[in-house]
Length: 466
Length: 86
Image 1 (cartoon, rainbow over the protein chains, first blue to last red):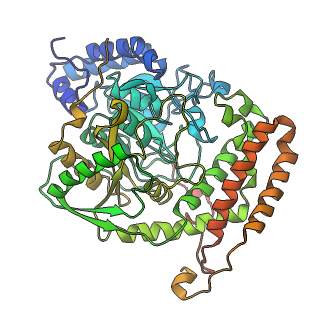
Image 2: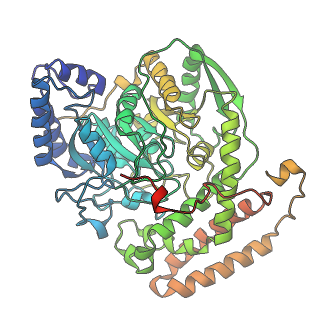
């Protein structure tokens, strides 16, 4: 193969595949080999789905040769977080030792939609056990070991969509699917220096995905660029009778750049606790954003944004895994703290959960009102660059730490996007996050695309030896 | 509608003592259910987690809402003949 497809964005790969300059079979061979050889180096892969991938790649090749090109994901390899059900005897482990032999009879809706788009499933990717819902505090919280960022193998990939971030960053797949309840797409996107898109709640069907919190869970793509995230989202979005929370709103990705000025808002409190290196990169990013539009301070009314979202998360997660917790099965999990923290969830009172859900209505209205004045809210992607493997991290979904962007975004079900915006301590990526109005993924992606058109952080890749 | 918008009174601030009493009561509940499975270090971890939960709960309780402020999303009764079909 004369063209090197590794670290090539999906959009470019698709052009070469459509023009038959790149063969889907050869593409899959390339990425399968990298998943098998390089994946273990980062603890990024649970199962390489070679047999299924080669059959799908051959089918794509035959169809394209016959003139039946399905669209930009046709023949493109990808990986899926291992909480998405796959049939055909492929395990779906949820990242947790007690479920390492678990198998489902059919594919999740997202997997089926990607198959319909012609994408080639090459791997089930590593994740934090049970999507982090048991309260983990450090990187060793998966039966496949701590997932490493390809930028520094002594640092964490982020989670809980750990392998989805690491695999894209290391050039093991062109794109991946992750999930987010609170931070699980944006965290690995930030730590691994790739783009990650958390769609609006209800945009993408969760049928066949492990449930952590029914009213908070979302599925979305991680890829090299914001543009690629748009291509993938169009393929996986849409109503699904099997998931009654999905919206009938149709998502069509508007990929053509439109000359426009953005109104960026900086939320009060969004910089609380941000490390110096992340803050410096953010300040540089603001200079770029000012070329794209206005940047103004924004404020939400005083509400317990984090506490409300945490109460909902802890109550629903305790119910989703009631059997595992009550039976004592959590003792089989990898993270020592996951052996006992879930028991504390019995202290969430029903009245407090209902109150949190009532406050949530207020949160959703107040957040939406803010977007009458701003197109997009911006903030540093994370509080700090990737944590060292032997350290606890500061997470938004537990304790009392501030994470206003995560609490508003997930609590109100709003779309979020993270992109790399530099490098900080220990050579690790820094990141920038965008938060948009419900159902306004196109605005969010357009902002990310405009930022990436003026910067080259997304074109820099870790030194990964084949 | 939130009471705040309707001019409703704010609740009296909870005292630290009552928070500690709540943590102690909830910890006793959790300990009674699961304490036999946990060692002293794990129980201490559970107690700290309960402290955080109580702090979150008290923040939530301090928000005044109106009688008609419903949970989100709204529950709907189910009928098979009105449900979406695959």
